[in-house]
Image (tube, rainbow, N blue to C red; front, top):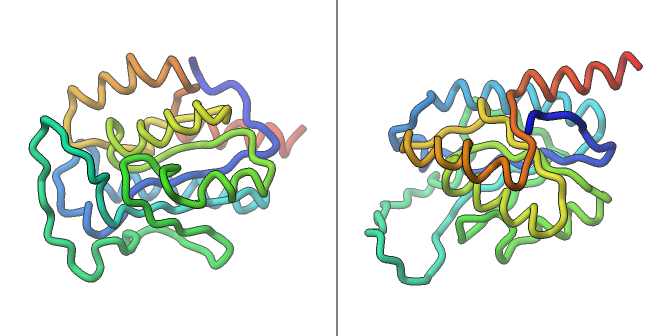
Length: 188
């Protein structure tokens, strides 16, 4: 479903756009993703809507059949990408699971602000972004997923998320559609 509406109480959630993940190969360059995130974050801040950056500092402890890549986590692993525009009023959350809601203060922040809708961006489309979007949907938030503000390392996994999973829980489109809705709101 295309992006049709932005709630008055929306929030932007940026997942895993961090230095430690920048070394992994991705389908679209992270600087392009960061630029779209910057466009969105400016629009959200202009309307005094929450902007929340989430970084991964670990993984869920459960066993899986998939081989888990053990990463060497340097001291700046969880630092946000340098190209991101981060302001003092933005929130920064550290997560230790795929989704940004698990064992973090994210839901509390959103509820305190009366948020009814989340726009989720970041890395990886089929992992951190999808997990966060699923959790948001299950918590009764309206979910928007700008697919040009996210990327993945696996084209097949990303395509499956975008075409099969996202339509069941969110409105999808591009950054421009969200910015156009904000412009219409301002002009109206």
